[in-house]
Image 1 (cartoon, rainbow, N blue to C red):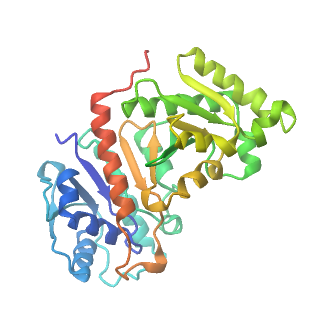
Image 2 (tube, rainbow, N blue to C red):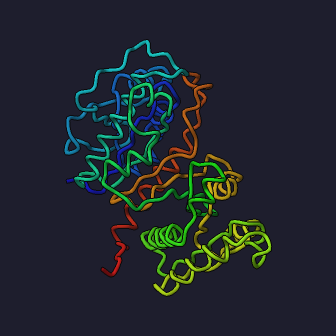
Amino acid sequence: MKQKLVAVTMGDAAGIGPEVVVKTFANTGFIKDYPSFVIGDIGVLQRTVTALGLSLDVREVESVMDVEPRPGVLDVLRIPDAVPLPEDLPLGTVSACAGAAAFGAIETAIRLAVKQDIAGICTAPIHKEALAAAHVPYPGHTEMLADLSGTCDYAMMLVNPTLRTILVTVHCSMLDAIARLSIESELRIIRLAHRAMTELGIAQPRVAVAGLNPHAGEGGLFGREDLDIIAPAIRLAQQEGIDASGPWPGDTVFMNARRGRFDIVVAQYHEQGLIPVKLAGVEDGVNITVGLPFVRTSPDHGTAFDIAGKGIADPASLQVALQTAHQFVRSRANHPFHTGA
């Protein structure tokens, strides 16, 4: 059993996923430090290696037990029962077969992770329209990961070298985000933030909770959500022994986190959390799904159809995501989270 292995899913074959994957595995020094393998279409990967002129031996493996990560070799686990993608697959366009293959790779990775045959998954970008064209019943990675692993309590966390943030609400309108706030949802995310930092090896994580309204509501002058929802959740978390504080004004809490005052910031909605992270550049940003029974990371960029097949895609974000996955795997082994139940 290769419990410390991290699998990389190829992503949408019509995008830059295969390119950034093979460029990452062609970096022999990086792969030596972060041994991994790929789940995907071996033909697509081999053609990408050839097109880029990379010195990389693409090797098909039948099972995880056959994976032998080493520099200069790309071990590829074929998606079970998958039809090979056509050699003339159009790049930069939505393709149902590419969407189906992307989902198949993710589904295979989740199955292996649930069985503990692997310890983590690093996912290359997928395309929501391609998934829909393939009649995949999920809009994105997070929903697949949660449903197929039987996980009910999960959240999206974004990290870069100077900041970590976790979201209470994600892909919804501002009106819906406000409507979805509750003491229970706040407390759930505070707990997940504490858990994620504990698994990362931080003994007493400092969890800052951002306010919803300007100046965290200014004592109720700019809305009562901070007083009536967020503050009570923070008090409940504190009673559980979590070092949570706030609600802090959203315009300063991320600055203070970058300066080292907090270990992670709980953001109330998508843009509040992602703008501070992405200001540092997407090449260093990593998306992490917190709450799963295994590690999952992803680069903080999309399929980039506009540059697919041009050989100019930067693998830096995927490498940071893969490095982060290995770091979480190693830290989880040394600092398992216990709920006390």
